[in-house]
Length: 138
Length: 460
Image (cartoon, rainbow over all chains, first blue to last red; front, side):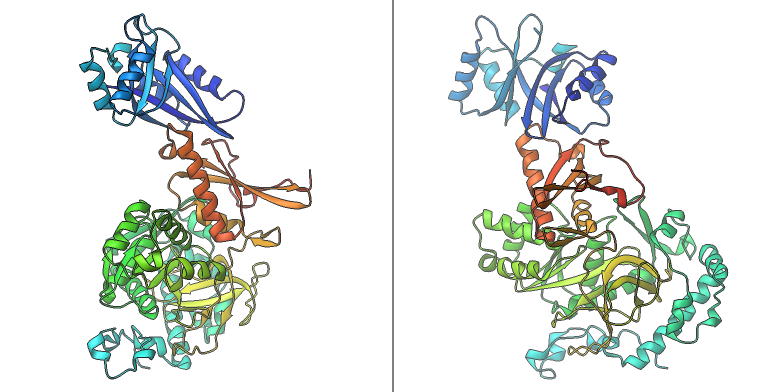
């Protein structure tokens, strides 16, 4: 089971990210990774959390949607370069990527937005690269 | 007096008409009543008006009370002009009676509800009996026939199907006259274009702004709509549009774009439409009595005078309305039309009777913007129009709340949405308006329309 990324629409003004973080804190949802992509007057805050269902409830009132992403722990053996090169050689296009804000199970993780999540995970696993699932965050 | 029913002989059956009517003048009437002489039409209207009034006076608690308060009895109506004695009905009357307080028949007689969107407040519910749906279908068949749509045509209906009246209204009319329907409903532009091309669709029914959007999208896909598509007729309504949009549609999409008018409170599309002369829209006056009034005084205006359109339904069962104020701005033309139809014409709708804004020399009705916004699924119900001044020029900006269904993890997609809204507004106003997408709940909530316009021009 891949990992859920929540994408929240926010206006580009002070306090919006704080509002989201505070709401999640109130319901004891942990932000594991985030990334803010701006487009002028507004932006999209992308979040990976330990409890996506609960998080979405807490964010009620915001315009938000979810998609699935691939999450790979970065280790001594599995470097960012190794992951990128493997996917490149298999013609998997990475739309965007960011890293976790805190270690997950001991390692920082690379979050990958790709077109075909299933195929990407299969390629990684076939090359003995660990892929995290939502369960790993509980 | 002769009762006019739909004369089946006037259906647009090619085999029947060949040899009887010269090819070039096969304007084709769906029903003989379209050419009824004016005097008979007025007699028919008076008779139906009195019958409608009688029923409401006796059976409808709300209208009965209103009429008594205004001291109007059905027997006070001797001639058509006496209609001016009847009090107006407004959207507020519908809201007070939300959802079905104005229902004039038992629920067992109702076969359909439509619900108009709540952009300007609460939604309004409109009910139909079997006979109402039947008559509505006929009115749309009349409109389509008037535009030259006939058996053998393939009509793609890209109005929304569902609570909105647009899709189903045109659908029933097209089915009635025997055209082949592609019920594509709204949205999924790529598929719309593919279907139009592959099915050799000859008639397109949608909003004019969506028609322009389709043309642009087809061109972007490398098609030349005028050559690669087979469109002949466009049935464009549900929002006001101008002659310059007509020219663009002719240049880019189809040779015969027609305007069709209606509003859900009366039935939906099919209240009025253009004939091939395109000099105003014929109102089906055996079903609706049109009036134009001064919106401030309520006084009835004469032919040619611009004011607010008012309709009385005189052939509806489930939810008849007396002198319903549409807030649409138009004027009445009672001169006979060269097409042979005797039913009066209304000029093309300029917008709703609300605070008109003058922006860079262009008249802008806030409702024109509203028409565009309320039809885009990705957008919420709330919007705000902001006027500012940059140097000597006025600037208009629209803030609109987005819905979750619009949110993409890629901001670029949202920029595309913003551009799409801007281009749709441009197609209606011919004016570039900057659109800001904002968070749900961020705009001030207000009951009335006036507060939707924020004028910052003087304070800067």
